[in-house]
Image (cartoon, rainbow, N blue to C red):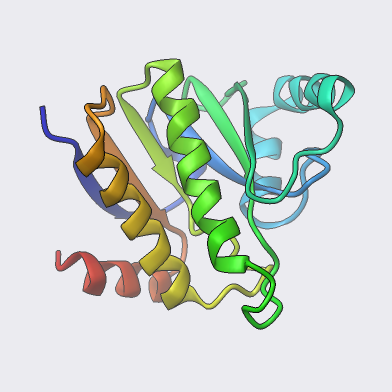
Length: 174
């Protein structure tokens, strides 16, 4: 079975996928951007599960990922991953961003999901260059699909803004 890569312009909180990925912060307690939107729309259950994870393991490190149920969202799970803040590229930001995608896909695989949706991790208030972030995201997803027999049937890149959508569209050649 071949995994399909899709590109959508829209709001990740409206996506009906088995799992959506949250560009979280290390506290896991919600924040701005996509993180805030997921926490607001998903309801208190996501926050309570995030607090339980924090009580168990402490904060979530940059590049790592954890998951919760999706609360009131149309997904089954939210995979929370902490993207790097861009500081010029000399602090392993590219590798840390790649780890976000790898770890999220690993969790999705372990959960047995058929579909997963990714936002544009770190390209908002963390100022990761959008084009570089898109290349990393697509490269890691293709690498995952090509080297692994996976049950994931659909990987969706969901872009909130037109600029990211255009970048992904040009790279994917849609």
